[in-house]
Image 1 (spheres, rainbow, N blue to C red):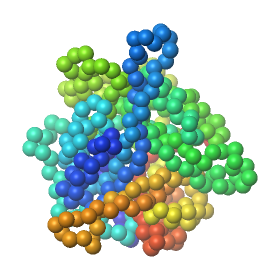
Image 2 (cartoon, rainbow, N blue to C red):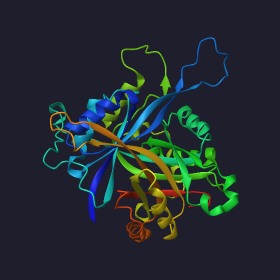
Image 3 (cartoon, rainbow, N blue to C red):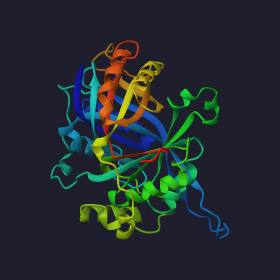
Image 4 (spheres, one colour):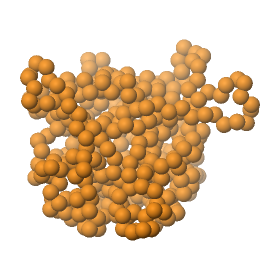
Length: 381
């Protein structure tokens, strides 16, 4: 069994940009990319004829969430190349961020050592373009209940919500006939925010989504490093040479951080709840072929884990049976099960996954482990 410390890079981009990102990943020598369908949400401009007082409508842009794994030494260069390929530095295009992860499994590394090339473009080689510290706050709620939370974040100017979908597993299955009271379909909202506003986002999410009530959902917070963040929260006509989002992005680069634009007052931050230590919780993710996750999840639950959220991914990798000149690309259905557990439980869950046959055919899976700072549900912090 191999253990590799990697950087997990996540690209959130309009579906029309996915081909560019995948082509750049091929040129970098990455063997595998995993994509998940989702959407980015923004507020539409209010029409002139609309009566004052009515709320602005929300616009949804179909997007892909691509995850890639690279050696940690290549993180910055890889993010710059991917962001450049899809022009993610322009407002409204998407976001790209990285986090620390450990991959556990029997498969070879998801990159070709002989072809791996992640040197930054010449214009970025001077090191002035650096990833910034952000917090990734994710909320898992019942499907259809995320709209008001997304609207609240947009109206407060806290960030562009990223939405994906999944299914609840674990706790719901243990309820027997009572499970009909908890819908299986889940909505997963992601908020990429500066650390200065992170506590406010957590507080708003808890209140708007009612996450302290039984069966309403789950919240977590992950430290990440973001190179490009979608800041276009309002879809409006361009009236000036530069948009406000472009001005803000330039000021972020000049200041070297996003602290200058936080909206959380110092007194408000002092009243915010104390976050849990990052080494106390972990994100334990199982990725395997479609239809093979049930046995591994059941083993994890028996080993002491709580509920899990299942999402569907598409794996893209070169077909080894094709010729070298024209490499055909194939998509393979995958299941991804996310569990947030105490870090002290990780070793036991790894053993349970091995015994369940996660790394063997037909599952052909692997485990991804990363840090989580906060884990909030109805049982409290």
